Image 1 (cartoon, rainbow, N blue to C red):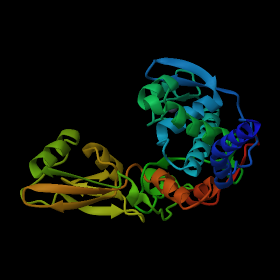
Image 2: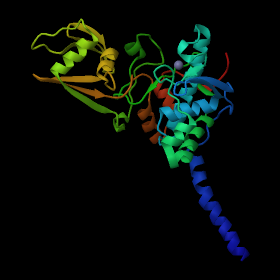
Image 3: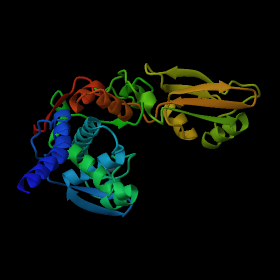
Image 4: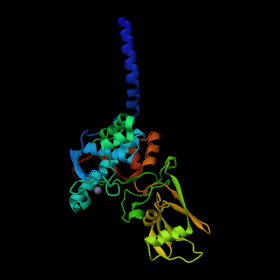
Length: 323
Ligand SMILES: [Zn+2]
């Protein structure tokens, strides 16, 4: 009887312990300070129309969960956690210096993805994930906890760690998209983006609809019959549209993308006598880390540090220091 019990215990240890051991070998815990640089943060939660105070790590988990699928590889999630931490601390320092934006209602951050980073509450995550909540949250929480206190810096300053869903195979220079030169946000080759479900998309509309949409938003635009709808396209090194001329006016790639609700500015046009097709590659602004690219690199055995250094040129990945 004792022997059977002993054997049973041994089996239990092997069955439960082996996967843990494999996980530990494959994904060793990174060196971290095991403490976040700040304890708490306040965020303006638009959905609830109120400012909420929470642990900094709780905030970061809500950002990672909102910004990246929990099914992504461990090292990609860790890269996302470090990017989110760096971005948030950098923005807080900027706001402290330049004044807090009104949309924050006095809080350190907000949950508007177009202003700060997307953030999702635990209640919403329960609703979104249902029965998968525990497993998913365990992965998200680990990405933040395993990298606690780790940030990216460039020449001693926190990095403005912008990221996007899917690149076109090459990321964009920040300068080509927003105008400001940022030495670590330069165009790099990105692999595996074509595996993203958002890599290719297209929109075909009639020439008449195209013209009416454009003139509604830009009353100065005018067309003559037989016009080439889009001309004088100025592209970035990565292929995104910096500027184009349509209906006699010049628009930036961002303005054009927004007007037609396209996923990126990397657009190829095909015009027939009655319609225009816009074939789009990638999803998002294309600057900094590509999340699908990061997931591909993680699948190829790269660490979160290697992933971050691929997308943010010349940065250090290190524990946060206040100076
Ligand atoms: Zn904000």
